[in-house]
Image (cartoon, rainbow, N blue to C red; front, top):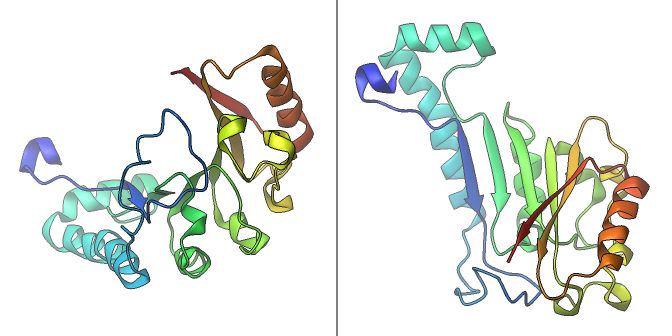
Length: 203
């Protein structure tokens, strides 16, 4: 469609909700950003509405043949189909997180979440709406929410453990803080919680 008409469509997007995080990782790309930089619930809903409802309407009206081909293949009009919630490494600290996810759950959008922790005030059932969740493991000395400075002692919602319908994994950055002990504990934690992978890269 883009090659032939010059009009592209956004079917996957990442939304930064805010820049708040409780950790102080040495490699963080957002640590110096404005922590008050946050979107409102209305702005978040408007962003999704434009890409989900209005984009679908636009493609139905203006690009009927392309839209029909896409719908035959996917069962959906050309519109937003996947949304990743991110920002500040802990998007679930955003005050509207639960309301927004519950609202999104009423739409045919695959949800992904990137976070380094789970605030206990967020109802565990909210995480059942996600298709995948990636839990970032921060250097243990940098994370005040790790009990006894152990990532594997942190609170994890029961609704993300051993779930065949949700892909959950870890993300870990290698650095001077890495030793054999934490690598073993990552492996053990994956087995204990039924997580499927650990994404690793070097700092």
